[in-house]
Image (cartoon, rainbow, N blue to C red):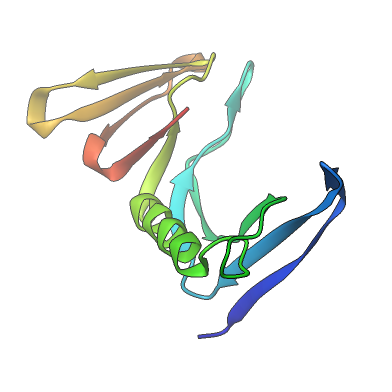
Length: 132
């Protein structure tokens, strides 16, 4: 599997006299596709999608007894789980100050998203990833 895993000093960061270290993990299977739209006061773009590639960067001053900063397997497992949860979903910003979002219980659970200007989207809740 192609990708990149690196370990090195965390640039410009020193803690308690010890150099902080960082690990970066980015692999070809750490990706997802999702739909979204940007909305702010006076503007809403059309619903559209992207393909996202995910990389994980973790840092800290402590190296474990085995010589590693973190277990690469654990980092990859968490990133892949997040990718699976977001893949083929519509990303919904639940704390948006310009959207009114309510859950409709009819038909197995729907999200009704009302936008400025009167646009309304109704999506199956199971097809959405509710983000802060």
